[in-house]
Image 1 (cartoon, rainbow over the protein chains, first blue to last red):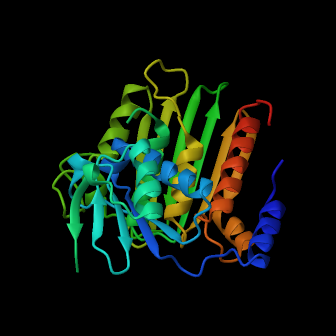
Image 2 (tube, rainbow over the protein chains, first blue to last red; image 1 turned 30 degrees about the vertical axis):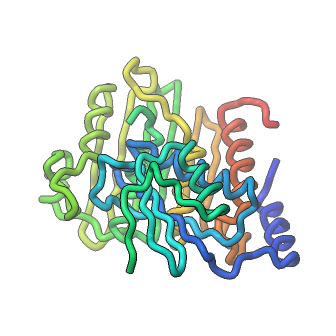
Length: 121
Length: 184
């Protein structure tokens, strides 16, 4: 059985190996309002995290937000990177979610077919 | 929503929207009493008696992006369809307690569903919130405290790749045990 003691040891190992991130260069934000949840936002978030874990990506921050008013396009996922336009993806199934991590976050290629908004500031 | 675990995610999300710093989620499944109880308590900003009276209506919402709010009405509907009830107690400035009760054996009761997925989502979304989970199935209990996890993590976030994998395994083991199955 895993215990909190194991978690502490894991954390010590991560800190000793200097593996702990110093803030992220990429932020992924998942909409988690009622509309998002009903459309599959939980599955999208878990798929994103599983893919990040599989690829051991340490510079990605994952956050949540509420309803932003494009409910018909949920699940919505935003990818924010410094110096780049904020990309909002819609209809993010677990498959699309994994693609966003593999293509956009890792390979710098925006997943065009699911983009619903681009915001430059 | 086809899983109670999704309603639960929605209920806790409401606590976070209400600015809660402490959330307690309790689930009790008891075959002898034929009951499935979900109770979510928070110390958020709470609601007035008038708001509590309105909150079951789909045409009431505190949000400004739309004029409908479906979270609570959906839970109200599923409990009523399953010989249960939804009880809401709230005081402004003190917090809210929502209790959804179902007849465990009712043919229309939605399955509890993927509670591990809901819990992991909640941990990612409530890094600054003290979140306590207590789940009892016929006398067996699984309890989790986000504060205890965070103390063990000393600043390493839940979305760290290796922490996420640990968390996934930890929840898998504990839910297996909770439902009386063999652990891996």
